Length: 240
Image (cartoon, rainbow, N blue to C red; front, top):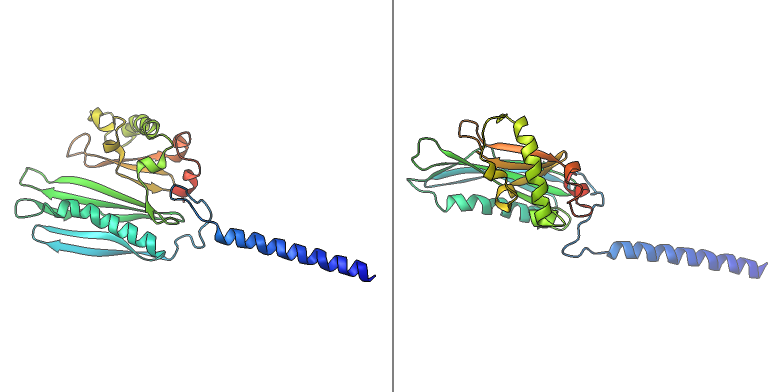
């Protein structure tokens, strides 16, 4: 009997040690700089809230979309990234180059990404002001920015897919079958680098590709249309 009890005790101890070892390994797991985690977030918004910072000076006035709270490194990276986009225009502002904010917003606080778009109108004395859009996407877990090169396994294949989708989706926008500048949807980074991640897909801001009267055109490319070119695990991250 004593031998049997001792054996049972030993088995229990082995099970406990094994379980503890498993928990320790999970707790100490780290991500490499290029890896992406698709694990569920402890909170779908990580405690982030939307806020705005007013940037104002000679020749400019911009309401900058920002986030407060949440994960510190992701918050800082996103806010600094949005500010850097605004600075590109503000640095040129003056009496003859007026910069005004236009429909800027934090478009998505997801389980894994923060997405924001900065809208700018520039009045440089032309007949109409020119509208620009700038975007920024931050991966929350790693606290790093996500550019097109980070999203696709092969950047050129990703651009080819975006270009093909743009040709299909633009006729469904207010541009319709009207003529638009085909060069603006060629598979080049500069044509598709203004994007944000939303649940339905990659929303790409193409610009005033038809005319100023048509306004700024954006399309949302379904994630399903990009499955073959996205890096493994990225769809779950970006669609969160």
